[in-house]
Amino acid sequence: MGLTHVAVRLLHSDAKDTYNADFLVDTGAMDTMAPASELKKIGIRPVGKDLYELANGDIVEFEHGNAEIEFMGEIIGTRILFGPDHSEPILGVIALEAAGFLIDPKNQRLTKRRARPLKRVA
Image (cartoon, rainbow, N blue to C red; front, side):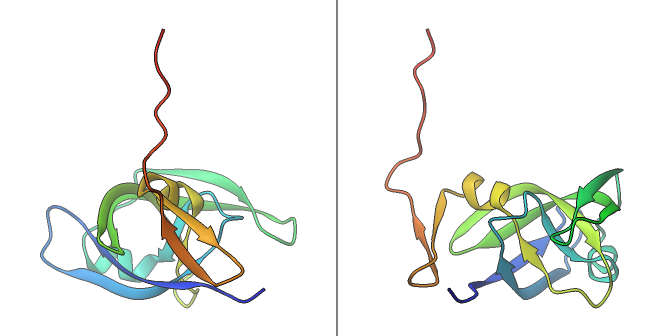
């Protein structure tokens, strides 16, 4: 199975600057992450910190903020982690699901859901 990358544009509603990069689609990551220096350049500021478990089992604390993220014709609001400055940007599963996408690992691409699931409230 190969790697899937998606062109992403991050923005902050109060700033004109954006951060554009190819993000690695990572369904093993809940949240989205980008280099901290790039987030700060476009005006995204930390609002908190959380502990995250890396793939190797290490526990690391990351600051997080809020960003608007645009990819494949969808724009959503999401939590964004302030990653190391030279780290590869990661598109996590929460952003993927919020935008209505599923990953097709065999063909290394994202597919749009036909309809979003919405359960009937009793």
